[in-house]
Image (cartoon, rainbow, N blue to C red; front, top):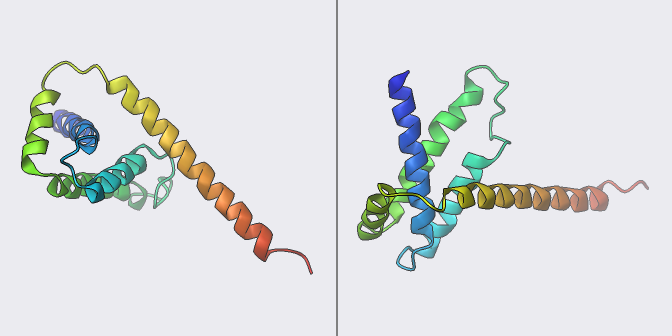
Length: 128
């Protein structure tokens, strides 16, 4: 259980490092977009595979999020990543902002998807 807690703390720390690195001007825009998607998926209450499906439902959380974090760290220049890893060891003043921003982004994304679905449904499901 202790190993699992350490792993979760490392994931949380890496997510925070990615968030901060995404604001750095030296981070490529492709990496910034990918980081946003990874963080939004990690915070999203809706998963690719629903959690109520036994075993498989949790695999996306256990595989996709860490894989996304790993790939995002490979897209960021090493100097930028190291700068934010060192900063992560210090006090954290912005951590509450991350949760709020993430929540807003996830809600906005799902509202946009719902609006697009509503538009699609209204266009293609009109009674004749």
